[in-house]
Image 1 (cartoon, each protein chain N blue to C red):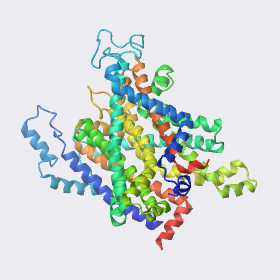
Image 2 (cartoon, chains in turn red, orange; image 1 turned 135 degrees about the vertical axis):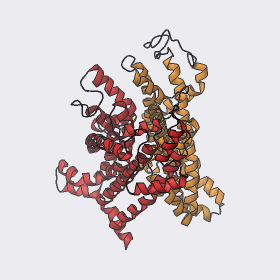
Image 3 (spheres, each protein chain N blue to C red; image 1 turned 60 degrees about the horizontal axis):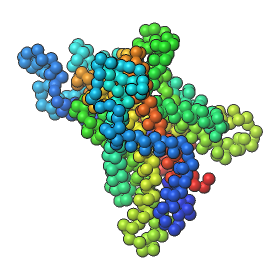
Image 4 (cartoon, rainbow over the protein chains, first blue to last red; image 1 turned 45 degrees about the vertical axis):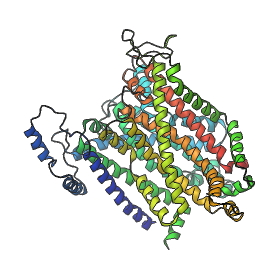
Length: 312
Length: 296
């Protein structure tokens, strides 16, 4: 198990190196420099600026320099927000995006697992069909459609909830969290239903029933752990999806998180910011994939034994 | 993959059609899947015939009229430039569907070639090829596609390639595992011992048996690609005007949704309905083509 974890961790290093290298050269091959929009700037100033940002050096030298900086955790200054470093901007956006992602994940897990487990307990009844149809609708209702619709209904027509901002007015965190979480609630509902159905047909559940345990106890004590393994394995990819989803949700609700910074950096051609954020987000996603894989293996004794068997 | 033990009993006579007939019978009992199929066929027909059947011209605008609610002249209303929404949605659907189909086709070709090569030859080549897939899998592709669109401009051709380049990974894995498990099956051995040529075995036994999962995955890839395109277009990083797609129409609809909600709702319905239909069709095909369900 530990050896497997270590192996996966070591595997992540070349992946990260690929990410940094590809991102760096992609961004540097982009047509049009970051200062080309400011037409009125005299050439001397551009030269001075390029010197300040090391843009006058050959690309490979910049690459080596950048790689060294990144290893020390320094993403350099932002091109567009003068006087601020990429680290500062990430530091400003990260807590907000993390909070949004956390609430969305809570919505997704709470609604998804309840619906999925409920459906699995009574398959092919109304208790199964209703949530599963709802899940299908959730999957087919992307966040950039659901968000505006929720704003239209609850923000504008009913005037119940604020429609923008984050932490300014009470209740303004509700709509963004629901918008971001719904799609994942739908996936998790389907996954947990499938997982639970498989587990509930196993012999050890029949044994538990034969012992005369209550249905509730069977589900909570025996079935959930195995039945939710697919959900745990999905958490890593879901986290990556939540980050990408935050681009849209933060844009819709005007939340000053990382997603909004990223989209703005993309439009502004803020090279250092987009470079730094890509590397940072990639690292986060790789780490979370690793964690969710580990957790899924730890929960599944069969896989654990296979790994330990393979070791010797 | 242990799904072939039942398969060998289902089709011992190597009548390639029986699997498909069986699948069709199962599919035709699944009402939701049939509904999905009907929606898909309608969409394809409408997309092909759009220039002939669209009620108005694509460029036709009427600035004096502006945005109007749905009426007899304009069934789905008009946008702020007085353009007919039904026409806009039909043309936008062409682009959305085209992205869905072409990007999926790119993914299909790369994935099948990669997976079949790795699975058929096995050994060290397989190990290297699949390790490359593993590394690519770990990359956060959403971010990379955005980066690509930023760096190289928002080019529709690039969008096809970028999305296709992301989606082939799963296809390669599916095809590889299918080919590997089939290579050593008893019915393939039996075919060998009957003296069939390698090519005949590939054509009559390997390909028909890999086709099922490939078709299912393809059906499910198309909606996810369309969703990706709409996502990018919504952020302003995908399809650019004067071209139009459902994601872009939703983006415009959001800007004016307070006064003219139909500009958001109709393209939204078009996109959701299509995703709905394709997902149901994919689920139905999975049930129909999976030999394990034939016991029931």
